[in-house]
Image (cartoon, rainbow, N blue to C red; front, side, top):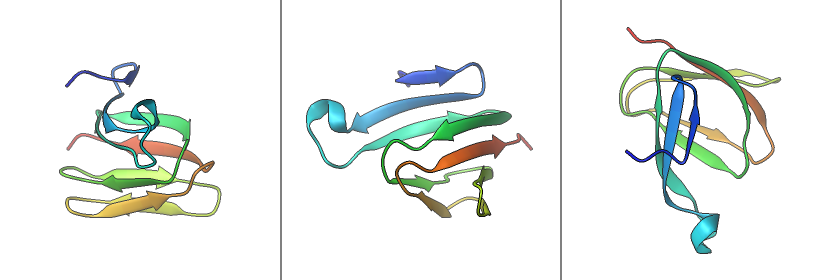
Length: 86
């Protein structure tokens, strides 16, 4: 995986397609490792969890997703991602 960005040892992301190539739809892979960090969603985002569990905390709610679950976050949403290794 060639990361597009890194958040220390906690998170890496690699894009498949997105605004850099003129697409209106973005897709990529991310990996979280014992993560806890804040992020502002740049565009509507769907997170599909392949393994482990991810928690996304917003002002309004706490969303948890495990394997084969998804989380949808709208553009501009401020979120804290958390993930712990089992």
